[in-house]
Image: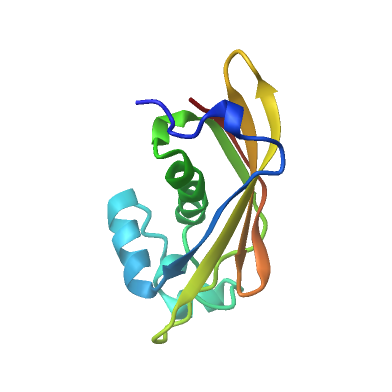
Length: 144
């Protein structure tokens, strides 16, 4: 499957549709089961605070995956992402309440990289509770 977005229709500065992803404690437990990462900082408030965290935090790889969804939803093809990397800058703190937390993700085409390969670099920004939670979040994407 090839990305539905045409390379010819994209320029540097093209914005991807922003998305907001909710995260609650139940989501973290489900992710722990799926990933096998049962570190208590992701589900045990007392433990998280004892090790110096403000509260339970979301898994870094969960946060990274949610940010990537902005790109895969835009291309309509997860295989279009040929490279992806981030730096974790702040944790997503997930309080034990009715709201949990949110991860707000925006993306922008930063550059066209290779006309022959039809690749672009997408820069992502992920914010939770007003704080940037991922740095250097970038994807190389092959377009149609």
